[in-house]
Image (cartoon, rainbow, N blue to C red; front, side, top):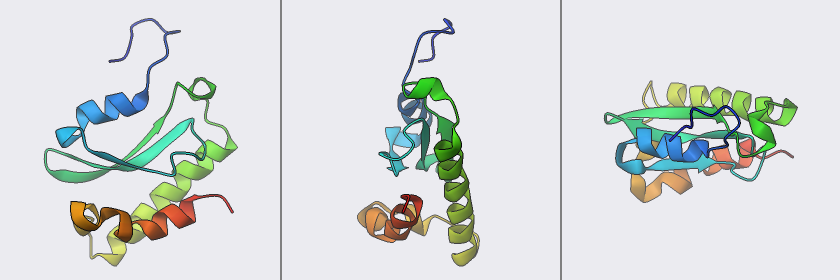
Length: 111
């Protein structure tokens, strides 16, 4: 998955998919700040948010756009949990995932 060679590039999405239940990972804003990956998945049945720098773009360097993307993801995820009384389970139901997270996609994209 991740090479022992420091200079060998890997795709962090593959790492996330191997960690996430059923290899399911809903990535948000995949075209903005590609050196940062943000999204939702589950580990041992529990909903989680993923934030990881992506070595395939800019060597994984966290620039201002990447840090803004990560900060917005954390801020909006926290707001979503608070709005749902502490649970994001509803946000991750497969039938309506894209619809329920449309607000997050819209607000995470730079204006």
